[in-house]
Amino acid sequence: MNSGTENFAPVIIPTLCRYEHFRDCLESLMGCTHADETDVYVGLDYPAKEAHWDGYRKISDYLDSIADSHNFKSLNVIRRERNYGFGPAGNTSELRRFVLSFSDTLIFTEDDNIFSPAFLDYVNKGLDKFRTDSSVLAINGYRHFYGVKSDGNTFFRQNVDFSAWGYGIWKDRVERYTKELSDRNYLMRKALNPLTWVRLYRNGLNRCLDFIAMLRGRSNRITDNTLSVYMAINGMDVVMPCENLVRNMGWDNSGENCRDADDLGHCHMTQPMSERDDFEFAGTGFEFYRENRRIYRRESYGRVRFSDFIKRILKHLS
Image 1 (cartoon, rainbow, N blue to C red):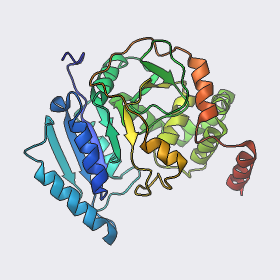
Image 2: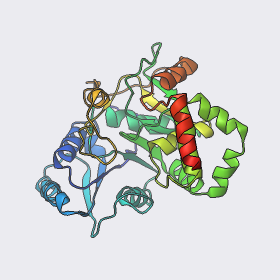
Image 3: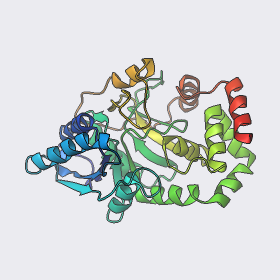
Image 4: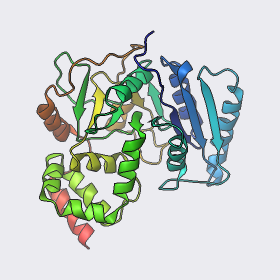
């Protein structure tokens, strides 16, 4: 099959002790088109407490057991000698830094995602297609279950929600947001620009709250929320497929960030996925751009009511 690309981005997967999630994630990647042309780097963090050890050992043994049978171009395991955790020097950040020392692209996934067979084809083609388009921050594989409009296009652009659940990105974008989001002067300059607040307000009161938390130094981790703020205040978009290519299975109380498998968690864990094994970019991505931005703002599960916004502002000021 003609991939439409010559260079395949390496995949990074930070993990620690969620054995079943990690196994399912890795095996779904093995089922992707171009798995045999993809280098995979697993960052296996060191247990921080006794409860981590059982899952950690299972993951370590599993990786040893498939060392000669996996179908990736290569499977590289980095076992941490101590617990790196999260943050600027955490397991994910160090894994990203390592891979970008020799590659100008990467694909990131947490260890609780499973993928459509077309996922790697889509992301790699997207990385090629939008490489020189500085208005695109990343190629997201997850498509929210909102009622997005389309007109024959297979992908769309939006700048309301960044999804970290399987995405491709370029080294220059990572270097730019890493530098700027760690620069207090940069954040203050943005805060003094009225257009910043207009853009954030348009994308939802939750984004205004996220930015306020960043200004007050209460958010030193680069997450999907901070990247949602970043692309909004810089007028950047993410690219998403019209047909979802990722399912997040971490809404079962097993993860650090996604807890309480309620109706929202059920939606994520049962999100339909494309069964195709390839992806073709059709359209411009700007079809219904304004309408879809309004849909994202209106239907976002992260939206905040005005009364709650005021309460949280007062809490920030206290």
